[in-house]
Length: 160
Ligand SMILES: [Zn+2]
Image (cartoon, rainbow, N blue to C red; front, side, top):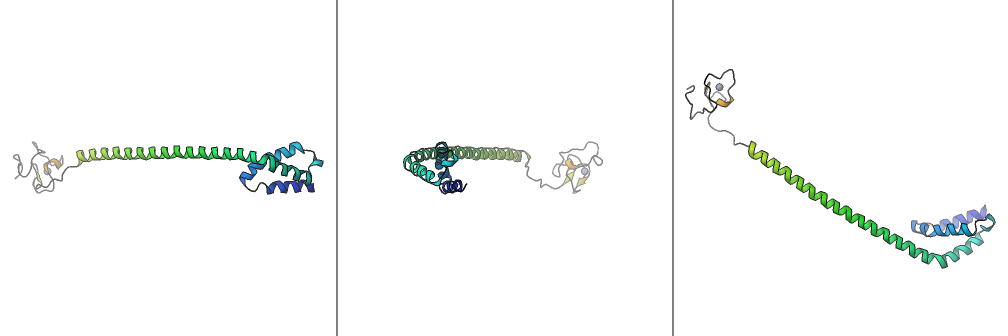
């Protein structure tokens, strides 16, 4: 039990970082394959194994791991490029959407925006300066022959 603890703590010292952990995962597996019997799991056996592993297998294993990590970095960079392109496309779409919204707004403006009327208020049925134009006269006060188009300048025969 004491020797198992010693081996575990030795392995832990080799696995301080994620990279180390990846590198020494193989060592852990191979040690247990070669020295799986409990009476073989002594610090001396482990020390011999680990020094052999570090000298003979680790450099090659590390190189393989580095290639894999580089490939991962390349994949991440490619993904980042795809995301950046997608972001750019979204920005373009937003700009296009905003532009078409403005076109619609401007169209609405041009059809609904009318210069406010400044001529003196005159109503054919009610007369001049009664607070409304002929067009705005109420149904109740409209007389027969009411003309919406009557103005102060052209009273069309309405109230003096
Ligand atoms: Zn009126």
